Image 1 (tube, rainbow, N blue to C red):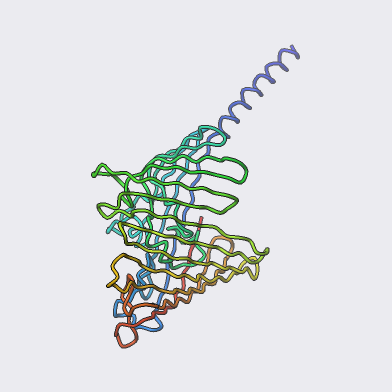
Image 2 (image 1 turned 120 degrees about the vertical axis):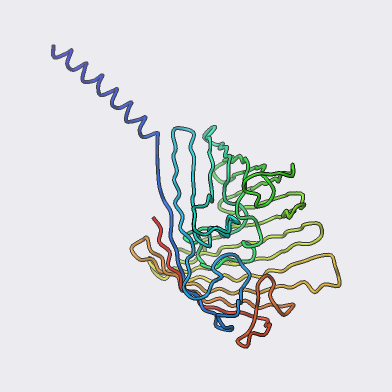
Length: 342
């Protein structure tokens, strides 16, 4: 009888272990962020509609950034991600004028075909550039011209390959630039990314028709100069039938303690074209940001930004004026942002 009971207990243990293993293979997570900010212009009145012309954080006074909730479910080799966003930043990132209702930022399914290969289909944020939509993942609160000029998201199919411990490759076929739902023109875009030890060389191409982006090559990376000092790098060139943009940005960041870091974004950005009669504008942007973390979830970011046009008066994308409301060659602002992550 003891042997029978022992065998039964062992069998029950095996069954429970198998059930536990099945449960471990299934994983559901929820994360997200909420942010708000205060902004005032230093070199211009707050009531004249001045703007740097870059994406997001373009209001004065107290303003809402965005709130997002990311739900992720994985079962074995397959899974899905749903990222819902609301607020002005989310509306701008998804080209949706409704800033109240929930908006789909990302929604995709994936299949880990093997240990080294993953297929993803749906809507996913772009692989181009150093910065991203969600402010919690950026060091600077305001965004760069390079980020603002490229795509925010893609709708399509991509394949990620881990070629070795250091090398990675991504190939994608997608709807044209920022066509996030359907493609009604019969056109598609193509993307590729080659990665090596945290450095990424990115490529994108569409026909340039119907407001497309054309061709873009982009480098994104960075280096740990020391335990406290990190240097991020971004450079890009875009051409769409003879016109486009190019630029480069450096992101030196220094951690003075576990809770506080200070960083600078120095960016040069210019438009280009094949019309010799046009004086294409360029801009030098300097953004100094402090980042203070409270209890690991709340991030306070004071920020000073100064953009100086080097080739032409007036804005490169935005409305640049001085304190008299007259077109100027520079614009400066102070911003205080609060970001909560969960």
